[in-house]
Length: 175
Image (cartoon, rainbow, N blue to C red):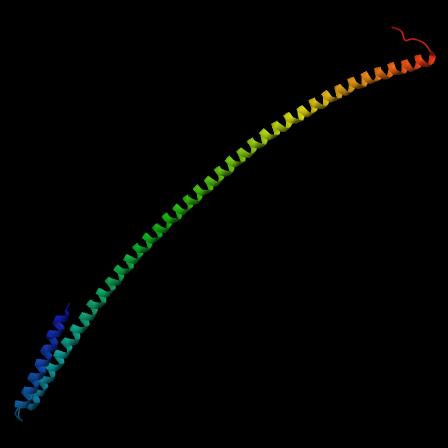
């Protein structure tokens, strides 16, 4: 393959050739003029064809170089995309773990608070039951006292009635 320097060398040679052609034409005599013109045209065509061939070869080399560069860029981007996707997955996993930890903390707090409320409620219920038992016991005691008072009152009423009856009838109660 021909490099850029080869093209510039060929261009320089072409200019030199053209200059030589020009100089040669100036020094030509009328008798050999057609032969020399044909020779110069052949040299010109040959030089231009060499230049075109060098340009085409350089273009192919440049196209291949560009293709390789694009492939390298595509591979680098693919690797970057994979790395970015991997980082996103790690970040998503970390966020999910963070969410789970917060949910567990909330669940633990709910459980603790629920147990605390249940314990407080159980204690209050026990206290209410004890208070209710005391009220029942106090009520029974009051009923017992009222029953005794009633019996004493009945007895007194009986004694009063007997006394009234005795007073009215004039008899004495038995002793």
